[in-house]
Image 1: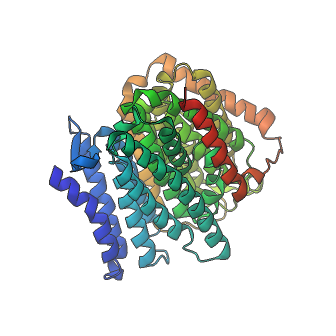
Image 2: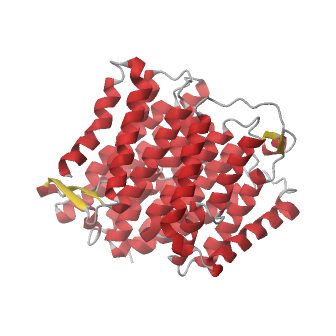
Length: 476
């Protein structure tokens, strides 16, 4: 298994650069790498004990592979396969597929890191590949959005690196376990970097503009898997170091409420989805023991929603109320919206039930976030549909939908114990209440939230604010 793991880590980088030598095989090579990752992830669920690889014993540079990694790696594989099929007959060049696979491999690496220095390398490579994909159209707008993302990411990682050095000074090891007994400022600096990279709480307000303004397949990758490279280490640290569990959970609850508070008033479909990415990442952090399963369900559904949003006739939800959606596309939109709302028979139901069971004492706040999710996605569910003009979809669109939405149906069986009357009635009541609130109140509300807080100078200010909050939380 050790040899397989090493080969699997190296494969995306090798294939990524080989695509330039064989540009006519770019899609096939990229697809093959993603399928291999899916197979590797499936093997992890059959493995009873974690696999640990000590790369540099004296420095604590360690890789850890277990079922938690398996959920995140499987998410990365399925989303990447779906995006490749979506782009199959597009005009995407070998450069696009090279960056996609390099990013895919780097994200996989982040999902098996158990030390801060190898995680730093993985996150930096992810940042470079993500920037190149965001700026791929080479328009002034895309380049600015990419540079903005890169600047925020690099500043965050500078704080993170200083924290990692402080952990090493305390223990002569970069291992995640070194957070226990490390100086408080080390924990604050590392968490600031990871919270920003993962799009968490106010330090994640860079995310809505970046994800909504990127090309459709890039938005699917960013929201489906890339931000989880910053979330995964927080989940892992919460499970390994008892002292940080409370900090991770409270930021998860705050993030879930903040994201959904913006989303319920948003009238732009892609920005609404981006704010819900912020909110759903909070659900992952609020219950670390089941965060892996929630990450899988969220990755599948959010990627599907972004791909569907890319084929709708407009991004403006007000305009969509007057432009019927082709019925098959509407059905796919409804299935995805039902899953993220927690409707039974889809994986989102089991993920939300598991999360709520691990949320004490934060259930009231998270019930509010769940209600906000139902209100937000009622905007999609109640859009008109019928025999509209045939809306153009890419040839691989329906293959991607079958893979992602089919994955939500199959993953529904992971937690079949959730199906008892009490567990079924509560989410159905929440969804019904959300639909009622949408029909009676939010459908008529025209509040336009200011975007001032998303400007670059304010994002830098939020980093300073978050650092102060983190110092205040960790020094006691």
